[in-house]
Image 1 (cartoon, rainbow, N blue to C red):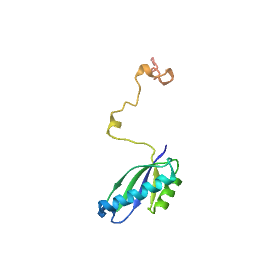
Image 2: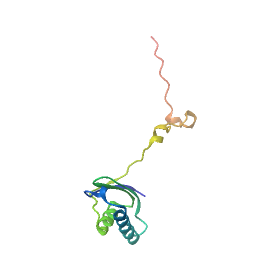
Image 3: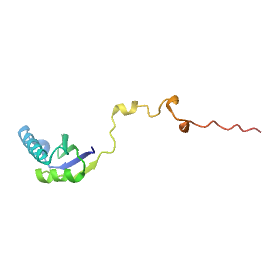
Image 4: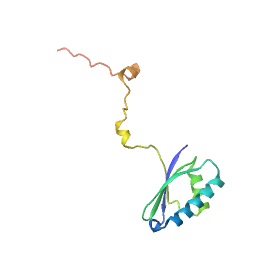
Length: 114
């Protein structure tokens, strides 16, 4: 299922206390239950004036529906195209030579005689 990053502009959100954040979380979960299993909230990051949420959903429209119903802004929604982390640097992107097909083999250099 596609994954999305939602950027919510909420001035001062970083100053909210645990009870306020719990209330927002409960409201979000209530709306998610009503919308059904196609949309899933993975987690969110609360910063000074924004919340960045990670969701799985079949479409951006369903995410917008959740935001409108819950009363949360969804200022920017971006579909995740790839995920990288420190282990990405360690991944061998090229299979061993014996695993390559003949089409992938590098042709030998031509010998040029004087």
